[in-house]
Length: 345
Ligand SMILES: C[S@@+](CC[C@H](N)C(=O)[O-])C[C@H]1O[C@@H](n2cnc3c(N)ncnc32)[C@H](O)[C@@H]1O
Image (cartoon, rainbow, N blue to C red; front, side):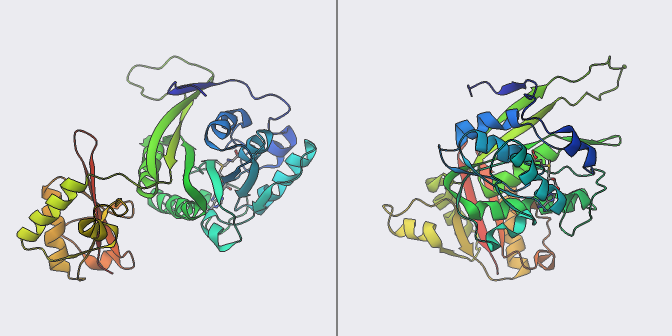
């Protein structure tokens, strides 16, 4: 891999392409299955030799095959039992031992005996796919709404985070979607989800050839021959500690009541202790007091989120039952981040 921000995807070598009979019996004719060629450079670049690659949406195993061909261990999770089984068959045809594949939803991963993984590499299920296979609860091709789909993706990547070694990368590929006359920013929403769980590092745009037709005047539709590889990493966030401390002083002076705890509290006591990745504030679950603090942060330009959903003000605390904290973040013109977690559970 070089440092170009785009990669042209050339034809898949016949020996690694999805065999035609797999496509023929597949509910989506294998249209959502990635290319082995697409994944191999990412395996080489982001997984140490001999390391373990996880695909939480394993499909028909293209990522797992890429991992194995690059001398890495491969482990997958695929909710559709028929597809999960066919991965072993695909490997066997190439004379390879089957990878470990859990025929289960990706958000149940940590419940199994999953060893730590060195790279998560996947392409995510698209919302609105016309899946005619088995309808299993939790199958994201069955998501009734776009919002539920994003929540399901988040649940899976949340579990992925538990299984990833510290410092390991999580790379997810996605396109923005066209659904009827609407474009849905799936790739961009996914970036936001990954950014809430990991530290976003980079993007690569993958381009490939597709038949071309002239575009009619004012018709914005493209032939959708690109996708994004979103590259995130499991590591501690770097925050602007001085700006965070100054902000907490200002909020106290405004009359907001909270207790600072965790690593930021320890760092305030002892600047030689572990550098905090955010400031954790404990607050009483008082709707008015929380609302006043959130309004004050919003006025100062902070984004307010509950998991990856925006927090709506004035606050209705009952809408966030079971979520335990709000995240307030602001990035300044130099890229410096202030991040507060307001815990109310
Ligand atoms: C875009 S395809 C992945 C293709 C795969 N990376 C490959 O190249 O072979 C997405 C896959 O996610 C699976 N899927 C959907 N919801 C899931 C869930 N909750 N957990 C695990 N897999 C899921 C779908 O059945 C589908 O096979």
